[in-house]
Amino acid sequence: MNKEEKPLVNRVAESGLVTIKLENYFPEEPLLRFDLKDYLFMELILKEKEFREALKAHDWTQYSGTNLLVYCSSDAIIPVWAFMLVAAYAEPYAKTVFQGTEEAFYTTAFIRAIDQLDPPAYQDQRVVIKGCSDRPVPPSAYVELTRRLRPFAQSIMFGEPCSTVPIFKRPRKI
Image (cartoon, rainbow, N blue to C red; front, side, top):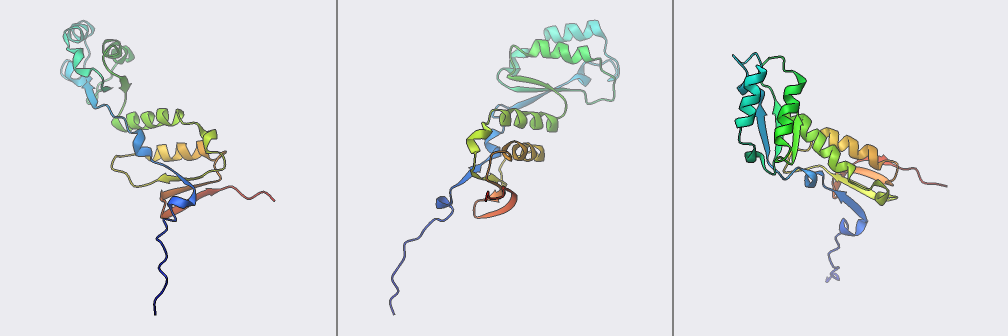
């Protein structure tokens, strides 16, 4: 018995789902580190005069076009102005200067990227926030994106378009 062959249909493509890949917002520029520990006397004490001289002699051009993470890996108490001074020297070269941990940097970078989205553009859309990624996306980015899209999207799902976890669905108006 010969069955009539039906053409293959990509139901995912025809579903009208809008997919957002947060990994696309991962910072492209390299993340370099500036550890203040290397400028401390006995890894404990910041001597202002020596610190200023060292920063003046430092090759800041190596940070051109990069994201610079400024931190201190020792348990020293660092005055706030020390971080500010590094930022003042690095700013003409680095794309961004960030004080904190690598995790905090990526959280902030993703929030800044999400700030550039236009949530009303997702009005009444069925949105899938892609889950699998080749790059690390902090959970806070998923939370913030969900929070921003919820007032506009018809539904928000997490995962892959062929296998999603429902997160939010706007009730139908009667």
